[in-house]
Structures are given as C-alpha cells and as structure tokens.
Image 1 (cartoon, helix red, strand yellow):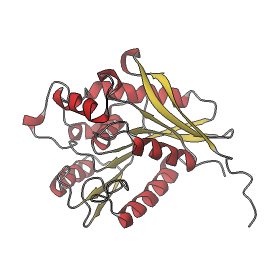
Image 2 (cartoon, helix red, strand yellow; image 1 turned 135 degrees about the vertical axis):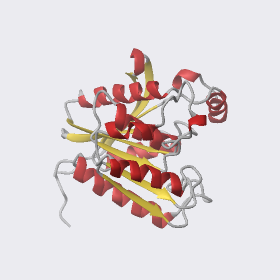
Image 3 (cartoon, helix red, strand yellow; image 1 turned 60 degrees about the vertical axis):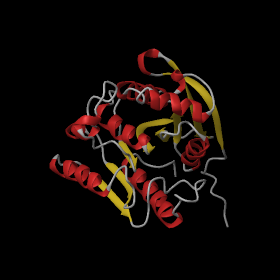
Length: 258
C-alpha cells in the first residue's frame, strides 16, 4: 500500500503553562501533530474526577486525528495532592466557578489560535462536568467557539435550588447565545443527565433554532467512553460515538490537511 506522504509524521505532547482566566498561569496538556498544518483545534475540558490519565490519552487521540489539542487543568488553583484529595477539596468548595472556567477556555483558544500551524477554527469537548463546561463555553466564550461536543454533561439543566454563587445560571438558560453546532452523546441509563433533562435541552435548542445532533445510547450510563472503568464502558456505543465526533468535526471545523 502506498504511503500517504502528506500525513503527519507523529506528534508532540507535553504539559505547558498558559494564561487562563484573570491572567492566572495554569497548567495544560498540549498535544499536536508534527508538521506545518494548518490544523483545526480542540479544547478538552476534563470531568469531575479531574485532569487524569484518560484526558491525557483523549488529548493525544485528537492530535492523532489531526487536531491541535489542549486540556487545561481546571483545578490547578486548588492546590496539589492525590486525585482523591483534590476532588474532595473541589466538592467541598462547591466546584469551580463557571466564569473562571470560561476564562480558562478563552485562554486556551487564544493560545491555539496564536499558533502558526492553526487554521483558526476551534471546538470544545467535554465529558461529565466537562460536557457542561463545554456547553457553557460554547454559549459564553468571548474568543468564539466553532463546535461543541457535550458528552453526558450533567448540570446543563439545573433546578433553581441547585444554583450557587459559583454556578449562578444554568447553562440551559444561555442557549439563545449558543455560538455553534452541538453534538450530544448520552446514555439512557444515566442519572446526570437523565433522559428527561436531555429532552429539556433538546427542546431549548429547537426553540432557539440552534443546530444540534443528539444520540441516546440504549443500555449506556454515565461514562460509557471510559474503557478503564469496566462497569461503565460500552464498547459499541463508544466506537460509534467517536466515529460521530470525527464526522461532526470534519463538517464544522474541518480536519487535517489532505
């Protein structure tokens, strides 16, 4: 078989520091194809368990598919320790502020779009709380988002009693300001978001004339992409979901150079 000499030769992946919300220097895991590009970009927003191995692997996966990919550590200001210790602190403090997350995303977008190998097109991706943050950023980013990937994002739909100083507005209520197409991947056995909450989000997208494509996987619960969690992983749904993501990105922000 003839070699595709136009393909990138490999990738570089490393932890870097970038300016996030308020000019704070934050850690981010950055993976990029080797080669001149130009490449579209993706910001990966980690889940509630934090900036873990799965997210580093997912960041490299996007780079393998020809994207400049960066995953900021949204918890780095909360101190160091084991993953469980950091998560315990985050939960005790009621999570991280929504406005700060959006500011960190904007810092990532500025960094990515400033690279000579960037096309300027960029999407946001997240699972669990990261799916919520991806949707939030797609509505509130000042830098602009071109594609949103919300994978089982819990807390997009919120009861008034769940609102806090750090999370003062449900992302659902920003839907009129959504800047880009959304792909949503969900499981019908998930409890956050529930099937009813996904339907509420879909109704809001329809009412506001937004472009979206949702898939609800039968027999899948929370975290069905996580191959390192046997009880949660659903291989067929995960394989299909990744295929849908690559297709969605090709249609919204483009793929790597031919």
